[in-house]
Structures are given as structure tokens and as C-alpha cells.
Length: 430
Image 1 (cartoon, rainbow, N blue to C red):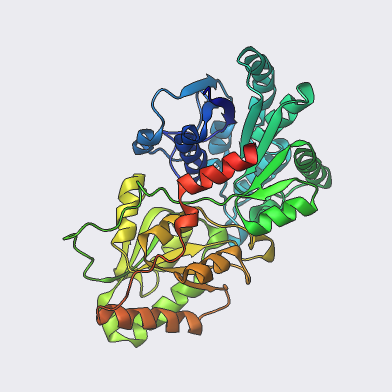
Image 2 (tube, helix red, strand yellow):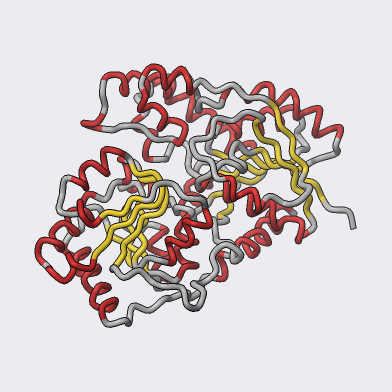
């Protein structure tokens, strides 16, 4: 039986590193098992913030790749201010950390490049793909954002080819994401963002959300929205092999990118107090970072009593990062603090779940992450106002660790395997 074709329009693809690449890389890996042939459309010369060559192993053999050139203005932004390198990963300085150059750069970013700096790829892609889709008899496409400019490619193609089935996949929200209000938008720019977002919601046949709350919010905004979360690949997240040594320290680890808008200052305060108050804890505690931690966050931590307890490994290849999860006792995950972000489920939580380790989460009350942690009994969710309850949680786990009874837990996580999620996707594609 001939496989049905689906064109996946994505900015992030190996050798890009970080969480943005994982979702459609894994879907593409398992789609052939369910009768679909994925074809990838991606830039020929992207300006990725992170690289991870090891992810190439997950690219399906002989997958069809279609590439065209893209122009991105990041080199101009970096000339204006070196810290603008963060822009490529959707980060920037906030509050007291903003210089006048940062403020100007953010204003330019928000008002000149709508919805984002990859917008210059939209028109040439629509022109190219209209012809490509017709010649190759492809009638189903996916656009994956951010960058949300890729949804404008879908919007353009749908207007030219009304019978085209278009799935708009939102890995993160557009105007409801926390950093949106920090973009220093004029009224006209804000209006344009919202009009474009609304057009995507109303014209896409299906809008995919990665969280339950986002799907509900998208439906309220006029989208035909379905939630398919991110997940973990069983081939990536195997259990610790027998004989593999555990750390000789009680280790709390953060894996990934940590920027200023998701900085759990109350956690650093709680840990600082525990080190000063509890000599046993001070002797056995380690704070491990794997990924890219904002310089200003790291500077603050290094100016506290945590200084001599930090192990900063920097960005590691995905497989190595999974190993570091296994060599930890508590895994830290953070979300934006405002209520509008309660629907964000960071992708790494699923690999955290697969590791069996306890998870310490920060974000708004009644967050979707809290729902997952309760269902799987894998950890605890806190607000950014908590301090004493955090200390109690950490001390409780520390005492269990000392006694050798800090148990692993993997209840009800099968629903989050990449293969099961791909099967859910194919049900939506019917």
C-alpha cells in the first residue's frame, strides 16, 4: 500500500540542537510505521543558536529533504549589541539587566520583524512550495512554530490551494507567551501580531497545541485545536545500566536553557539557606547545570553560598544530557511565572519522567505541568513565591537519599512515548 505524503515545514532540524528540533524529528521517525511518508522542508543556511550533531542518528534513512535559502538579520543585531546572540533562541535581557542597547534591539526585533526575524523566508517559500506541492501531489502540510513566521507560509499556501490540508503546530503560544509583553510593541505592531495569529487559527484545518490549556485557549480564539503533547523516545531514555555508578553527592540538576524570565530566585534562596543551616546538607549537596545558563543568573548564584556547590557542564549532546539526568537525584524544571503560561509544558519534562527521577517544578498555580506530576507522582510543583515549602521538599528527599530509599517512579508514563504520540497524530491527520 502506497504511503500518504506529508510535507513538514520546520525551521529546526538536525544538526540544530535544543528542544525545538525534537518534536517533528521524532514524528518523522515514527510516521512511516503508520502509513505516512514525511518530507521535510527546512532552510538551506539556517542560523541555529545550538548545534547537536548526535541528533542526526534519529533522521530517518533516505528521508526526502527539500531546502531553500533563508536570510536572517541576526548578524546585524549582534553588531549592535553582543548580548543579542540570545535573540536566536528567543531570549533577551529583562528588567534591571537591560542596557539602552538591549532596549533598542528588543524594540527593533518586536516592531520591524513581525512575527519574527525569519519572516523574510515566507514569500519565497510560498512561491516555491505551491509549485512543489502540485508537482509532487502532496495535499497535507504541517507548519511548526516558533518561529511563527512559518505559519504564514501555511497561510499563504492555503489561500492559493484551498483544498490543501494544513496543520499548524504551535510548540509555544504566539501572543500569549510570557516574553510577548516584553517586546516593546507599538499598538499597530501588537494589532498586526494578533491579526496574523487569528488568521492562522481560523484558516488552519487543525491547530496542534502541546498542552491542554493551550488547546483550550486556541479553541476560544477560533482554532480547531487538538492537544498532542511532547514526549520521550524509549530508545533515548533507557534506564541506568546495571553497575553504573551513582553520584556520591545529592545532586539537583537543571538540563537545558535557563533565561532570566524563568529564573527561580526563591529556589536559590532556599538552597542558600539550607547550606548555611544544615552542615550535612552542605557537605553532600551539588547543583549541576547542563545546557546554557544566562550569565547574569550564574553570576548571582556564584555570589551566594552555592558558589562551591556548582558544577556547570555547559551544553552537551542530547545523549550525554540524558546520562546526566540519570546521574541526578532531583531534576529542576522552570516555567514563566504568569498565569497565561500555565499551559506551557516544557519538552524536557517527558525525558525527566522517563528517567524516573524526582522532579522539582516552578511556574504558575494550576499549571499543566502540575497535573502531569500529580498523575505520574513524579515530583512537586511550586510557585515562585514559595520558599519554606521548597526547603521542606528538598530536605525530605535529602533524608531519603541519605538512607538509600529515594525511589524511582515511572507510573502512567507510557502515554507520553513518541511512538504512541505519533499514532495520536495520525488519527488527527485522517
